[in-house]
Image 1 (cartoon, rainbow, N blue to C red):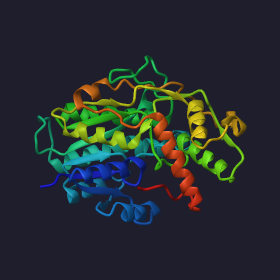
Image 2 (cartoon, rainbow, N blue to C red):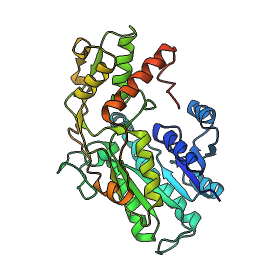
Image 3 (tube, one colour):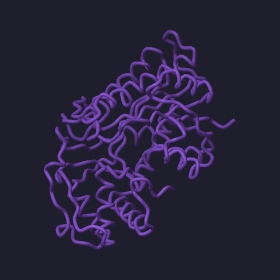
Image 4 (spheres, rainbow, N blue to C red):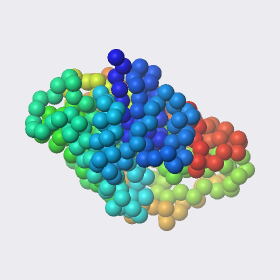
Length: 341
């Protein structure tokens, strides 16, 4: 029988790529959605026709238990979160409830539906759980590059909530013997990334300038450095973690960093434009507490899982710029549409 997977955050960038990957691997894929009024739900139904949807809410414990009971998954991928870091200061309490407490509620749903009442060894019949942890947990880094043993010092409500969910996942693994793992994913982007994220803000800005729809691009800290990869590569690591023989946490990234300035240069070069003519640095766009440098050490994933990224930074940026030029040329609204698939 085909393995069955339940994905929270199915309407997001990672959820869509993961669903496609699992379908290609022969899985039955279910997506958790809060309701049918969300316009992204119709997009999922249209573009991921083989995915079945089930109602549930990371804010509602009972709905998660009902969803797990209905789907009877072999694997649960918890990708649902309020994931835009700047917004986490504006909606700190909601971020804690969804991104942090949502992990607890999903772990509890799995524990209850599996009949786990005390510690027991992991077994082949257990539901396997993947938690989407984040490099933002490292925050004010104490060493570079960052690996699975690097201490956390998050610098945003989002990073704090992710750290809470990460430690909870470890705790349920150690306390109940659950097959529960966390993937500490560094920044991963694609043409499906939300328009509010800096990578997509840059590529959309370049596309607008290229098409004569804008004359400048305003950005915050150009010197912040990130380890950027392609989301389509990273979701493959998620499945490999849940198919491993033992539950462990892994850092997933490229091991190479680029500044926002380098991102900007690459994006404008992809459109054959001079970035210095159009980019305006705006200090009001800086974060309250900046994370200056994040760089992954993905050695463990490479050695134990056989995972390596395939798409380079330059290929990723070019892919996103070309996609956004096509999108805007068609008159689409990037706030509502993305280049799925």
